[in-house]
Length: 175
Image 1 (spheres, rainbow, N blue to C red):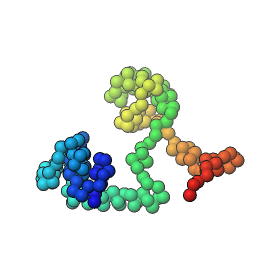
Image 2: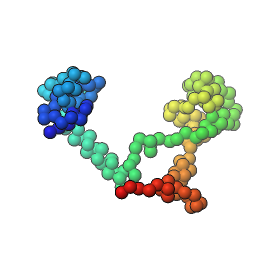
Image 3: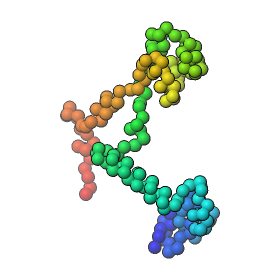
């Protein structure tokens, strides 16, 4: 017996239905929520989204190799590990870097091939620079707009020894 992926009832022969772009195995009652999908039609017309076994096995092997590599470090890696966090005082760094080189906002914008209004917004802290603009600014002004990640990581290193209670000291488990 299989469960309906919509309501959870036990179904001996589920229907394959497309609901809001997702293909689900549902009971007869939940079939009305979408359009029924023929099984032969799915494999022959799947040009936009590949659901064939060869591509799913290759993607699962690549994801398993990346997760096993991340697992050896003790923590799973994700897309945010690759990203640099921008410093909170990025707008001051941009302004000071520009002023140290004796450039006006318009001159810097022309040098970076960007609009002067963008430079103004960045220096006021009203806008965050895109990755491309950040690289241009760092190169042209010889500054770093990235925040040092070590301070954030040490903040979460563990419990404090200052004698205060933690949630684990207060909570009693019902095992």
